[in-house]
Structure formats: C-alpha cells, structure tokens
Length: 335
Image (cartoon, rainbow, N blue to C red; front, top):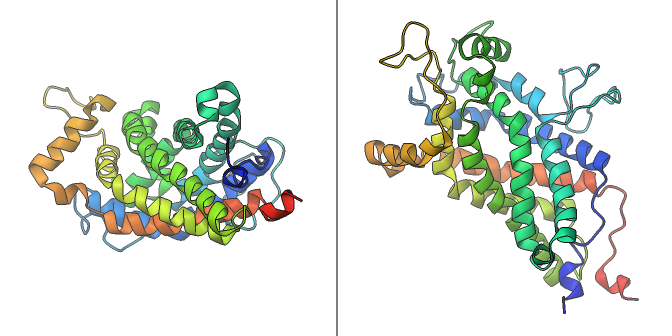
C-alpha cells in the first residue's frame, strides 16, 4: 500500500492551464535575462572559431532579443522592451501564444496529470511518469526553442558580423536569406538528442528531491519556493554536468553557417542540415580528433549557469504556480 506521506507533496491539484502558462513564462524570462551572459561565454568557448575570435567578453548580451521572443508569451499587443520577471506588462490580449517555458510547463503539468490515468504502470511509477512527461514537454517546447537558439547562437558568435545592425533581427534575416525557412530548424534532431536526456534527468531528480524533502523533513508539507529552488539547483547542476558533451555537439551544429559550401556543391548551394543519426559520429569525431577535454569545454559556466538558473527558474515557477494555495503539514490532513 502506498505511503500517504510519500505522495502528499506530489498529489496536490496541478496548476490550471492559465496559471502554468503565466508561471512558466515568468520563470523563463527571469532565468534567461539573468544568466544570458554566462550562456554567451559558454557558447563562445565551444565555438570552433575559439573564444576570443567569437567575441570574448564583448557584447555578452548580444542576441538577447531572440531570447526575449522565445521565453515569454507573445501577442499583437505585447511590447518586447523592459521585460521584468515580476511585471509581464499585463497588456496582453486574449490572443496569447505559448512560447518555450510556457509551452514546456503547460505540457509537463498536463502529461504528468494525464499519464497515470491511462496507464497502470505509470500510475505505480511516479518517477517514470516524470521522465515521460518531461520528455514529451521538451519535444514540444523545442519546436520554438530551436529557432530562437539558432538566432541567439549566431548573434552571440557574430556568424553574420559584429557591430551596429548585426543583432538578432539581422541574424534572423540572414538565416532566412541563406538557409531558407528550414534554416531555423537546423540541428533540431541534435537539440532533441541533447535536451531530452537533460530534461529526463533534471525533472525526475527535481521531483524526487522535493518528495524526499517533504516526506522526511517537512511532515508531508509541500516544499516552499525557496526549498524548491534548492532542489532545482541541485537537479539542474547535475543534469548539465552529465550532458555537457551532448551540448558541445549541439552547439557545433547550430554554429555551422550553411553558407559554407560542400566540395561538390555549385555556387550558393548550401550544405544540407545534418541528420540526428550523425550525432554519435560527431561526438566520437570530437573525442578522437580533439580529445575528451573538448567534449567538456564550457562545462563550468554551463553547470554554474544551469544550477543557478534551475534555482531561479523552478523557484519562481513553484512560487507563481502555487501562489495563494494553502500548504498545511500532513498531520493536519489526517485530523
């Protein structure tokens, strides 16, 4: 028989669609704008051009525009300036579209609640449910994340030049010009190959840490946002360290401007986007030609940024999604 204390923290009513949507957007904007410089440094370290030739420490917020468009809800009346994590300018009209963080959390909460109802195996395996829910949500969110990361990475490294007028809009237009619409999804399979393993580690670990904390130290009470932030930091840091080699391969693919010609291609005929099946050969190629150290290049800023970002991201999400809800200890439930 299932221990009521073990499930009390995780069996609470999931957030509504609107609450999950807004909470995910707020947390996504907060973590992206706070930790964008570290992501820029990590991307430049992993670039084949080298750190200094990719820009060094200059313009570490270059490409932030693409993140702003990919992290928060967007709509006809939404202005993309002065985004604040606690002030999303509530001038949004009903025509609200979901983007990266919002899509992820809406999907994750939906899958997490629905899957156990359709499978007795998942009903008896909360950890596996979290793996499946997080993986499905990650796939859907990548449909938006990949285009924004393409623009962001190329802007950060100056793939289409540095200086005035060479920001996110220029990168987007240049990608469309040289690559066509498919260029915005270059490396989609590679991104999935990196992000699904990362998420499949991070979120089950995050949920397990919260459940362990609730069961053993909080008398069944749901962890506070601060406690959830600590769990998110540990889970994010561990997952990022383990999956750094996958991130190196993904970054290399996204930075391959398709303006590079193949030996057999005629003028202006671009190299096709690589298949996900080339992921393992690419990883082994880097290991063989550049060494194990290269596969872990950028691991320090990546792990630090995602560890701290996990605290902000999941702490703010937990606060926003549970705002106004009662949180009594398990002993009061049993009275």
